[in-house]
Image 1 (cartoon, rainbow, N blue to C red):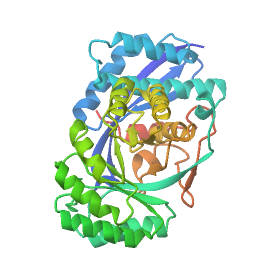
Image 2 (tube, rainbow, N blue to C red):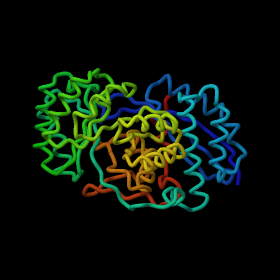
Image 3 (cartoon, helix red, strand yellow):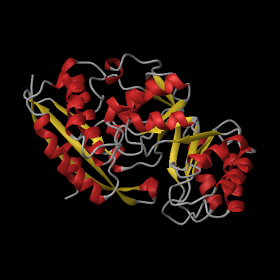
Image 4 (cartoon, rainbow, N blue to C red):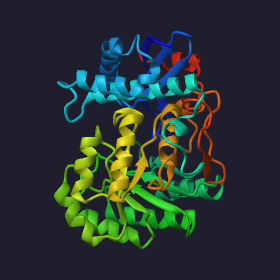
Length: 375
């Protein structure tokens, strides 16, 4: 069996969980000579990086076409070696490699008749606890607290993660007293046992003193973790914050590869390491992170906030280790989760099953890809 075609195709779509703003992804379709297709994805996020990633995948296709898809790890290594000049310590080459790698794993699983979780060594558990992960964008913090409370009380999610500093009219993350009031209202809305996670949002420039004040205040309401309370490169700031809080500290979603994660974990500043297989060199790259996390006895969390392709990959990756706490899902229906695949992923009573169909366990709808195609 040989690979006969590698096709990048980018999409632009409105994301209701981000105040209906347009978001961008570059998908990768890899076809074997018997017609079997594997799908991958990179979370390129912006139009310029999306266009560049498409061109990179086209340029890297000769390293993939003609190869046996079962040799996916060797293909991954050869792409890494080929991109040495423009992937050192990360960069857009990692987007391209991520999309290709995920598509190869999907294709390989379909050809072998094996689900991804079994190809990765087997599931530590067959289902994962689910929290609702969304951005705050309503102008009223009372409405925002009620909205998130409904995800727990009415839809069964086991908790919520709320992004501050996002697009929309919420203006959370800018005024300490208002933020503290919101977290109090949120705890009242979700009840005493549900998880609450807060994500600072990269548009907010908190200093160490402000971060300490807020996290200490939030702890009264039993915060599970605070995500990127400071910019990720501010290692000294994180070190100053850590002694002042009992809350888990999460960061890492902007790292590109295992070397970046190795350096991050070695600093000792992180409890929950965020990773996106659509950015950090695919499923193969994410596996390398898991090995690092297990060796350091910290936690990891999949940044699965794009399409059902990444959701499928992240579910398998989250299930193969006991170092994953929860699984994030966007609670509002959106095109890349609910239209893109024939059977969308849904949580039930706060849990989601790990896909057990061959490959990623999804079937992508070509007509939906075409509908949202970014040209």
